[in-house]
Amino acid sequence: MASIREGSKAALIVVDVQVGVVRDCWNLARVVDRVAHAVGRARARGTPVIWVQHAGPQLVAGSPDWQLVPALAPADGEARIHKQFESSFEDTPLEAELARLGVSHIVLAGAMSNWCIRATAYGALDRGYDLTLLSDAHTTATTELEGGERIEAETVVKDLNLVMRWLSYPGRKSTTASADEVSFAPA
Image (tube, rainbow, N blue to C red; front, top):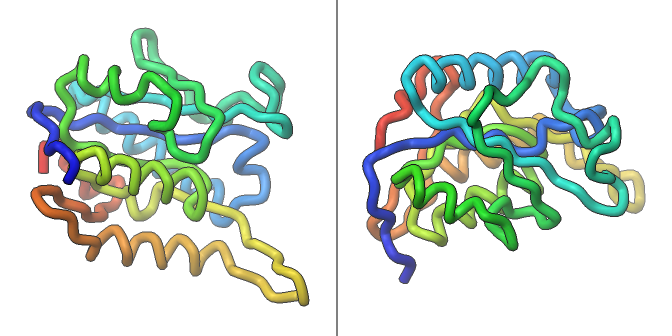
């Protein structure tokens, strides 16, 4: 069983809203707006905002595609976490940063819902954090499968929202809220 996190703070973690990641994502303009709104609300409340950026062979660190979308910019002093795996926790200093801040509740937004958002959400719960997925502030692209089948992006987003609302872990809470509804208070 995972240790339940001590701490009394929430943090907003914004994952991979990078030019090359979100280029073909569903409902992108609205999702970026909702992420920006959540960031503004978190900052106004004094909730830490942590920015995560993925890098790999197809997404080279420092390249134009690696940059955050122009509508989103970290403020001075906000942590930036660089990752190479889907989960924002794997082989990164994220957990140490959360411990330094006294965070026990993660509010999660970003891309891609079926990859890095899902992996980070499960990683947070597995490590003993409470989790709120921002239901209107994550997105992905439609996946084309062999044989012409498609997994529509909107369906993936709705599915992850449903799962995170009802997922049950002992001693932890998992839920969803919109960028307007989220309280940024410990669960």
